[in-house]
Length: 314
Length: 314
Image (cartoon, rainbow over all chains, first blue to last red; front, side):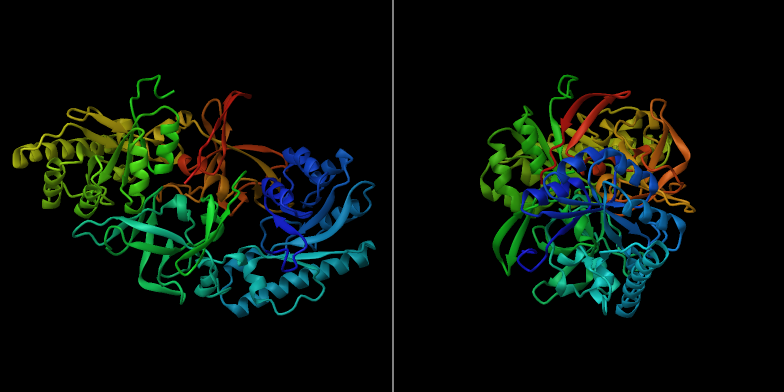
């Protein structure tokens, strides 16, 4: 589906995901996670079959890749403000990495890559636009610095994060974008302001299994192993472990009903409902919810149009 | 292994788990979750192959099971203080349920069952002993009430929860126990006081993948899809998303290093370490961590003795 709409490559988080995409016709795969050194042999095997692009943010890792003698494709990962991983684009390590990589006799310097994960702290379209623009500018400026201070040409500039890209105004200088959550969206994204409830494509269908007289709650068969324990944005009010639809086709949530806690297979809803009632839940985090299941049911209204296998290998 | 040590049945949370155990030689299976009405046909299929025991805590569900005409085995679920699911043992519904079930022409009344999930709020062995004793007494007293007020004999009394049973003093009157987490234990259980770190049998082995100069943290390849987002007990100090071993064979944790946050595949450790360093993590919640993987590696010291498949179907 992505390919028929023009996607020419794919980004993954794990080598297991990369292998699944390689087995299904994708031949240009970026493993957008700092290389796990114990998996370099596996990466080499996969790179024999497809163009596999690795991500590096340390000299140690770069040198280890170099020592294999294998012609890996390598991105340099830049910290554009998230401060989780990635090199500081104003520091010396970044320049040194780019030099060593571009002068490597074996490795190919693919370009520079970043992920504006701090967009998850922003709220509303204006704040997200600002994160997107800062991300873009940081990357273009770093590219210019490499050209100026190091005489290094950067062929590709890759940016990421669903919230930033859902609101980006322009991408001058950027050659590639890697949002991921946009394919399904979720409740977290609606709180951030990336999308509306009606844009969210994945829901968890659950049943009320226990409702005791005199109690203010009921229990459903969707717990942490369906919804995950993602607590949602810390500032979301009211706090929720999953929102409940009032009218799914119109994208309207019930105002006063939500999943307030999850244990392993049990979920607790803050209002009584009859045993057997079905509830359609908008999970906080669709990626983690989907990773608990083996199959998507592709629906339109009440009809199941298709079933798609979820490859949840590690 | 459980069977060779004398276990004669097994308790599961889902029908998918029940089917796996049925496929592997277990013929007495309690599905200890309030019956999901949309799954009654599946339950019937499985009950053709093994003794499947269902759990009921509402008249609606009981009547629905009765309406199938199928000779299901049924436990009545009692609320012994957790207040999540289960009938109030002092109320009228409990008595009515027991009457209708014991007089059913088709259903078999297996007995009464409970789960002291509130033991997860208790701290220390004395508090856990008290929860265990309250659970036992509630069940025995309810059994006596059924006998006295309803002339109903209760053949089995089943209690649960790892924290309570790890400290229980005696089980007079109880015929069955169903702890689950004890097989692996985890960091949550050490905080509650059910076990020591050395009792914990499952760890997640991870690698440092990013460590930036000047930063106070490093990044590992174990995030929510390895450790889950279980935040641990709310009163645990310091807060952790996973503890890190200093010496695994002695059961000693590093005092100052821990996983402080997890995103999908990334984990953040609150101290720098070199890229490539391996860290062995004690997860907060072993059940949720294990459910993310396909395989156990059974180790002694540095040797892998065996690999066990994890059947994570839904």
